[in-house]
Image (cartoon, rainbow, N blue to C red):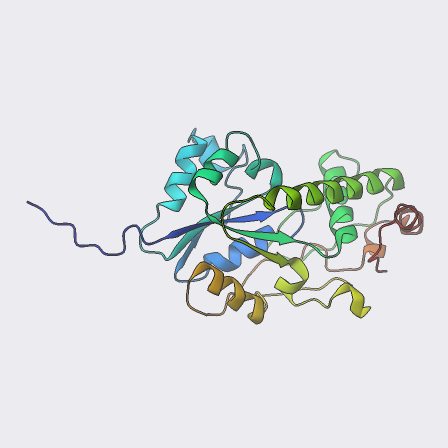
Length: 256
C-alpha cells in the first residue's frame, strides 16, 4: 500500500479579499501573493473574462480549487461586491465561512471619481487609460460631465454602505482595512488626503493582516505602478466644474 506522508496538504485556511471597485484590491492581492505562506490569486478570479471562467470552470470548483491549495497556511482570492454577493457565490462563502478582509477606502470621493473615470474610458468618452499597469502613466486630462462623475461617486457610496450592512451578519471573521492604511497614506482628518504611491504594503497593516490570516510576518512588496499618480485636478480639463458639483453633492476629501 502506498502511503502519502505529505503533511502540507489541507493546511490552507480560506480567505477572501472583499474589495469594492477602486479600493486597492489588486494591490492587496499582489502583496499577499508574495507571502511565502499565502496562496492568493492575483487575477480577476470571478470575472467572466478571467482565465478560470474562460476555461469553463464552475464557480464552485474555482473556490474549492483555490481554497484547497496544499503547502500554504492561507489561500484566497479577491472579489468585488457584485461578484462576492452574487446568488451563486455568496451561499458558497457562507457555507465555508472564509476569513474576509474587507478593504474599503476612507476617501470615498477619490474612489468614486476614479471609478467614474474608468467607466467613461470603457464607454469611449475619455482617452484610454489602463486600470492596472507595471509602468506609471498619468491620465490625459479631458472633459467629463460633472453630473456623471457625481452619479458614479454616489453609486460607490451606496454600494459600500450596503456591503457594510450585509457583513454585519456574516458568521465568520471579518477584518476591515482601509486603502489609506494599506499604502501608508495620511488620514483624511490630517489635512493631507492627496494621492500617493507605494511599492509595498505598509508594515503595520501587513502585520495586522498576517496575524489575522495566521501566517508569519514578512515584507509584502508590490510591483504595480500607481495608475493615478497625480492630483484629481490633473485628471480632467474641467476639474473646477466637477469639483463644484461634487462638493454640492456632499463629497469631501477633495484634493487639487
